[in-house]
Image 1 (cartoon, helix red, strand yellow):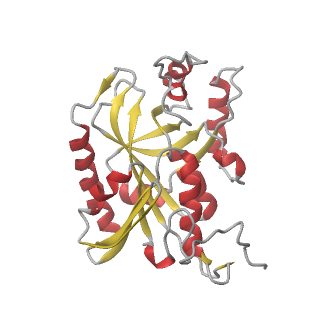
Image 2: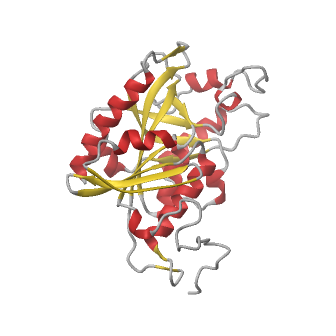
Length: 291
């Protein structure tokens, strides 16, 4: 096997990975991802210790300990284009020898835990609630660049969604699912749903400010879609990419969605910062139990 070339796996002058600016020992086996760089410190302040703080661009990383076990929290920025960078560079840090540029014979399996905000599209899902994505549809293009292996059940859900999309839209969705082990370990007692990962915040999620959306009935169709007795529950911008790339690279992933808005009832949380902090604490308690 030939070493991975410098143009394909780019390192900084200190040997750190190009975008994340991290070294292999900087990353724990459990990595919490948040979109907002400012949210990293809101997670790490609950650690028992913080041993590392690094940042570059929108990627802020803190690594520390809970109950004596190492844990990392990292900001991904918004949308799946950043997820492509985060997941590939995390995998390179733990599964490629950066000195020889060769894959390691013993591969590490990371636990990738997203804690993000989201908007519900079903009227009965209340603002300020928590939802875990058991699967996610991506309407971005990220996973079309990677070879995926999806199950028969996933293909059925994907085919049903494709039939419901506007015929003139040109949309080509993909699907990816939660790691069942992490769902059992961390998701018990939490509302589960199917998430729609959009490639933008405004028209791609059915919002209109001044620019007019090209497919005005799209969100209404998603709300009514029957996915073999299941339904699309919420909108956000990272989960499908996290699930898809984690599966391709052999890692475990789960996405928790803090519901700050309900698009059906047109409501938004009255205390979003407090709600986010409350769920961060609750989810860290669960994560601490499996570390």
